[in-house]
Length: 336
Ligand code: BTN
Image (cartoon, rainbow, N blue to C red; front, top):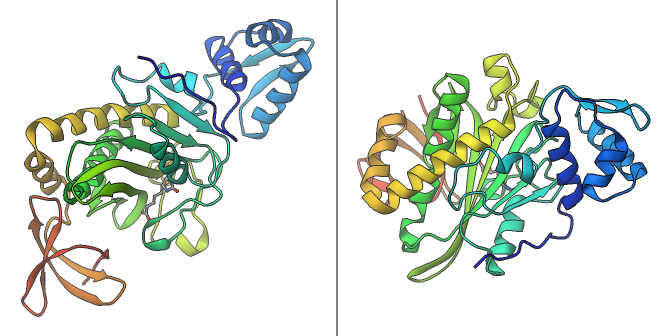
């Protein structure tokens, strides 16, 4: 049965979503304010007000109420109706909750998960005011330049296998970025994507589970896409697709590619098992084997050399004291 999608508090008004869809469907064409108003069921002055709001977000709309409106290309706003057109069939993105602004898409998704929202739902925002990173960090979430998205999953696996879900997501982002930019990023276990030594994507997986059963996981993906520059305090360690490729990229296109690859890796994981994911990560990540790393946990910092992945997706490290142990928690960086 089809579960009707509620509009969450603070989520994008269905009619703004419809307005964006009408503009997108009529790209290059002048369309009268009256016609838009009729199609989406609001007054002409509301259309005008919302168009002003979209302009403030960087959407280039020509015209005014009397002459009609015109856009030069399909807006790169991650609104449900624009996005949905580009998505593959299947569960991913069947339900989309879009926000112009929210605290954290992971926080929203965790709440939705508790309320029974189905597998494959995505929560996506143009801006986050409290983007969450790993280890209590915040995630710099500047307006409309990045992708801030959380995918809600209900994988039929044990909690011990949850790290594999982060790897599945990392592989999907990687392939999407290769397709979009033609350049090949590195995967830093478990959740970062890098160009050279600089990070442009982080993944935060949060889980709601019991001892032996996952209720759901929220896989939060943050990608720096069209940032022209990176704030001073991050510029040594972070980058964006635009900085690396010297051009802007369509976020809609990247999200569409990402969800297609996620669908395929996720199904591969369920049908072929963890080995297929572990093997693929070992193939594409320079961090999987033979890398000198420094690992910082809440209680200690140590260095060692990576020794491949365990079947459950954990990274094995030969510490400098000779012990070979998996990294359970901790932040990895390259060591000399
Ligand atoms: C990291 O520290 O590398 C993980 C960063 C994850 C950021 C994303 S942005 C979308 C989602 N919502 C959040 O609050 N965090 C994740």
